[in-house]
Structure formats: C-alpha cells, structure tokens
Image 1 (cartoon, rainbow, N blue to C red):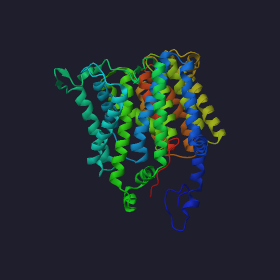
Image 2 (cartoon, rainbow, N blue to C red; image 1 turned 45 degrees about the vertical axis):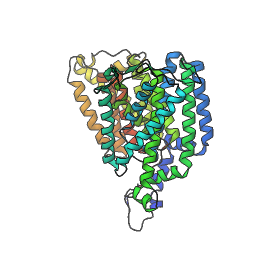
Image 3 (tube, rainbow, N blue to C red; image 1 turned 90 degrees about the horizontal axis):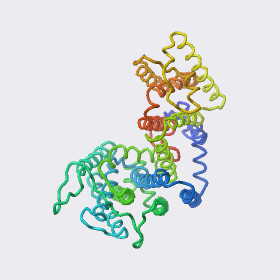
Length: 481
C-alpha cells in the first residue's frame, strides 16, 4: 500500500496506513480552523459573528457599508441556500441562480410600479419564498433520479432558460412588459417592517443581518435533525441510503425546496436594496461566485459559508475597477505569501523558497539588463512603495510584445508540472514558478483588476481543491477507492 493510504493493500490496516494523512488534515491553518470550528459551540460562533457584524455601521461609511456589509450578507444568504442543496444533500445544482432571479423578479412584480402593486414586505416576501420553494420542488421532480453530470446539465439548462426568458422574451399584460426585457424592472419598493420603510443603508443592513442570523439558526437545527443526517447520508452514498430504507427521492425534493426558498428570500432582499432588477444580475458570474463561497469555506459547513462570503466579497470589492491598481498588487502578493505560509512546511523550507525567489528575481533582472536595456525598460504600473522594488526585481520589457504570452504559457506548463512532482523537486520548481507568476502579473494583469480578481480566485480555488478538496471547514466525503 502507498504511504498516503490511497490504495488498498493485502494485510495492511487502513486506519494505521492513513495515520499520516489524518495528521496532515489536523496540521496547518486549515487544521487549526477545523479544531476551532469543532470545539467552539455553534451558539458562541453565532454570537461572535453577530457582535462583529452589528458593529460595522458604527465605523463604516455609507458606501462601504453597502459594498462590504450588505453584499457580504447577501452572499452569505445565497451561500446558505446553495449549501443545503450541494453541501448537505450533495446535489450539483447549476440552476440555483435562476431561483435567486425568480425571487427578485417576483418581488419586483408584487412591490413596484410595474403593475401598480405595492404589497408590503410582510406579505410579498412570504409569498415569494413559498413560490420559489414550490418552483424548486417542481424543478426537483424531473431531476430526482439524476445524479452528477446529468443533474448538472438539466439544472444548467433551467438557469440559462431563465436568463433568456427575462432578457429576450417580454410578454405584455395590459400593455405592460412582464419582465421589462433587457431594461428590467425599476422603482421597486424597499423592504418595510409594519409599514416602516427601510430606506437608509444602516436600516437595510440590520434587517438583512437579522434575516441571516435567523436562517443560520434554522439551518443549524435542521442540520442536526433527522432530515439533516439523512441528507448527509444521501450525499455520501445514495444507493447505501436507499438500501437503509431512507426516502431518497423525498429527501432530494426537500433539499431543492429548502435551497430554493432561501434563494427566493435573498432575491427579495436583493431587489428591495437595489430597487431595480435586470437579467444581467443573474448570469453565470454570480453562479460562479456563490459556488466559490461554498467551496472556499467548506461544503456542508455553515461557518465556512460565512467565512467564504466575507473573504470573496471583501476581496472583490478591494479589486473593483474604481479602486487603484496598487490594491490589486498588494492583494496579489499577499495571497501568494499566505498560500505559501499555509502550504509549505517545515518553516525552514518556506524560507528556502522565499529566499530562492528573491535571489532568482534580482539575478534574472541583472542578466536581462546586461543583455539589452530594452528587457528591463518597461514601465511599472504605479503601486506605492512596491513600485521601486518591482522595477529592480521583475523583468518588464519594452518593445517585446510576445514576451508576456510566452511567459504566460511557460507559467501554465510549470504549474501543471508542479502537480506531478513531490519532495525537493516540488520545492525547487516552486522558485521559478513563483517568480514567473510575478512576471506574468506585472506584464499582463496588474492593469486589469476586474480580470485579476477572477484569476486570483481561480488560482486560490485550484490550490485549495488540490490541498484540501473539502474546503477550509468542510467534511471530507467518504469514498471507496
């Protein structure tokens, strides 16, 4: 049997053989986070999160509260709904964002000037949530016998069909467009509590925070209930769950309905906060973002969803196009250092890698400059104090248009090679890979923060799935190899 316990051997105890693997699971930042998540009771984690979140309006401006606070809570709510379907029940639902859009559009129809209907939130939100849950149930009926890729294809079709319908098809009722077409629906009523409209960002933020806390509490008890345990059994092995007389089809439909209901609730809040909805709000990028929230934090973990939403939204806002490029550069190098700190052990090996990268950079820059000054004459995008270091460390040529493409292709090859080597070979290969990563960043992506944020999170998720497939706080799936 192999040392990692990946292949079963004759006369070898699996528990003993997998001892090193279990130690690795408990080591590092992920292991520490898992220990904290296991030992700190759920009510204490919820209290800490509520206390910190409630303090944000006290020290954040109106714009920051909207970008960092409100949108993070909306991502948390969306991640919690997807976590029910994917994390608890193990169903790969790629049409989830359509349920989010359905909730937003339905709320817009019930509480806006579109048809002159202005139902209060106390009525429209329950109606929308129940209707979205029913839609999820209907979607789950033909999908209940599908698994894996087949289920993903069916649900992805539903998601794309929804976007096409609200964007292109615009049937009219009494001369008024149903969905508003590409223009969407505007002048949506804000949420209200017993007739009191929540207009200010602070009021909206606290309302969403209360909703998120209630959903977190409800999902915690649901996870610990018989239904939650049955969902986890379904996730691990549907055939075994059915053999144990569990109502597999009914459990799938429940997961679809619960997840859809939470998505509809998030849609109501989203529409009321933005006071307008368009088809562009419910495309593929938002689906990828929600999945990233769940995957980063850990599939099946409520705490992981909260952490994933905070990390992703804060980083996305930090890399927004209106922010200076130096934000992108600082975050880029900070992410690299953090990944190295969490993934390279022991510490002296991390020092060898960082020292090797620094030495290779200065040496390569000196050699390139000696060959021709054009290889180091490229401009450095303004980046504060880092700009001076970058100009003397990274090769940024002037007049060599193909250099960036060649560096990018070489970097892809090195990254693929890293996945196939181990030990000192991997440590040695990390040095040129990291330096070339800096070169590609400075020559191709630093001026494009909107593109850079997707590249950063793509790399982060690929690294996380390689090192820890279940996410930061997720529970590994039980698989028989």
